[in-house]
Image (cartoon, rainbow, N blue to C red):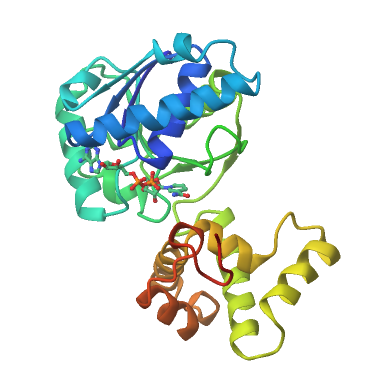
Amino acid sequence: MKNVGVVGGGLMGSGIAEVSARAGQDVVVVESSEEAAKAALGRLERSLERAEAKGKVASAAEVLDRIRVVTDLDAVADREVVVEAIVEDEAAKVALFRQLDAVVTDPDAILASNTSSIPIMKLGVVTSRPTQVVGIHFFNPVPVLQLVELVPSLLTSRETTERSRAWVEQGLGKQAIDCQDRAGFVVNALLIPFILSAIRMFESGFASAEDIDRGLVLGAAHPQGPLALADLIGLDTTKAVAESLYEEFKEPLYAAPPLLQRMVDAGLLGRKTGRGFYTYA
Ligand code: NAI
């Protein structure tokens, strides 16, 4: 697959567009307004300029030439694969998959979602082609992290999963793992309860944030501790993923601890707001 559509050019969508164009593919990004399209293009330009400065991309301009950022969904009509990366809102994604089904003309096209927590099945069943709807879950930052989780629903065909695997592995140079269509897939289902346990440990006064993080860095060779990682992910996002895991499995280990809820209510969301478990300049 060499013609790629990406719907939503935010943090993840612009990353998916970048890696696709860097791999030589022709990319159309659809945003919801002119202003958002401008912001998406700015994100792409800055990221590609950084990559060029580091020698990871020969010419940022050449890569950008392969990307068009538009506001009209009809522009993805001829795409072989369309990856949805809009806001994590079930109603918005369901509405978009209905539209994509009507707009995309290639009968073999794959309609993928980058969702972190919405069941792929809910997106597949609103289309006339649920066998071609699949989860392709990238990790942030997309140009850096190698992993992609492939998430077929019960109705996704084996052919769709295998074509998706070929696209992310041979096409984009990523590495794929297979996951069931369950909240959290593999990585978040393991990572989020780990982070929540660290928050509970800190909340109970058992150890300081610094010592919890240093413990995991120095004692378990983690690149960063769980509380610093929560600040990086964003405490609002951490809480939202915890809630979708809890909703699905009803296991106490997925329940967001009170401290996490209060910090989100207070707007202490981590790096993006300058303060979470740590303070950032
Ligand atoms: P974001 O908020 O940075 O980007 C979403 C973009 O979608 C915005 O630019 C918005 O203007 C655009 N948009 C909204 N509705 C649209 C529509 N109907 N048509 C076209 N564009 C529309 O969000 P982010 O972080 O990029 O997340 C996107 C998706 O990726 C979500 O489903 C999220 O769960 C998932 N995800 C996020 C990760 C993260 O670390 N942020 C990691 C892996 C997956």
